[in-house]
Image (cartoon, rainbow, N blue to C red):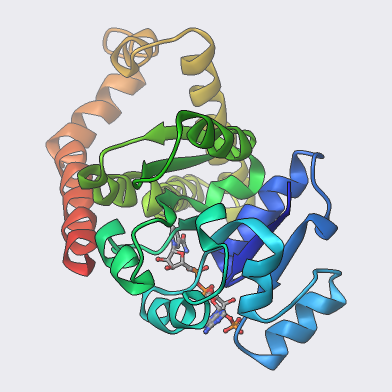
Length: 266
Ligand SMILES: NC(=O)c1ccc[n+]([C@@H]2O[C@H](COP(=O)([O-])OP(=O)(O)OC[C@H]3O[C@@H](n4cnc5c(N)ncnc54)[C@H](OP(=O)(O)O)[C@@H]3O)[C@@H](O)[C@H]2O)c1
């Protein structure tokens, strides 16, 4: 396989590359990246990444991540769309809100293999989520190859393109919502007498433990909730307050708002 190319190596490009490195199956020599500024270029070179021009990245790679901000995509594609043998490569765009149809228009060709992907930042630690929509021109073998490449970095979901904005809300923005909820738990711990750092450790450990238990025993959330809710106990008092304040409804609305914004960007 040729190199894995990254056009754009900010938060997400780096998270994907670090996720690959973490699997132990890749080294920095397997990647080639292009960025915009001289500062980023120097920094990446110091870290041992091969940095090149955008067209060199495409020439040397078999799979190329388009990991720039959506507004920079037209410039980037205009730099590469006339290169030879593009039809032999796979372009994976992670740009939020950019439809496959739009991407294909930018390339101005019909025979390019384009994937619209929505990963989340957790790919960095091998526990991400990838929603993938494959464009035309893919054989089953090509699709399996891409899924196999990405699988070690997280859960792979092949979805219809109309669901990508939903994944953007749930999984793309999701880590920020989860972080906010954890912060609230930690603040609650501070109110009950702990230092913030200790309270956060307790909160994180409680979340991780709850998720592991649910996964290992394949538990529905309601079953787990009932297991820790004894008659007249502390949990039911907390739960009644939680439900009175409409926490579940708020979270559903939070996701709806993020979805609407993702759709607006499209
Ligand atoms: N952040 C998330 O959680 C998340 C999740 C899913 C999808 N996404 C999508 O991922 C994409 C990247 O987001 P990000 O958060 O990683 O952005 P970011 O941190 O701002 O990184 C953007 C990268 O693009 C580079 N760049 C800009 N113009 C370029 C050009 N003309 N040629 C080559 N490289 C260029 C930048 O280089 P310099 O460093 O030199 O400026 C930087 O490395 C976005 O489209 C976003 O919608 C983000």
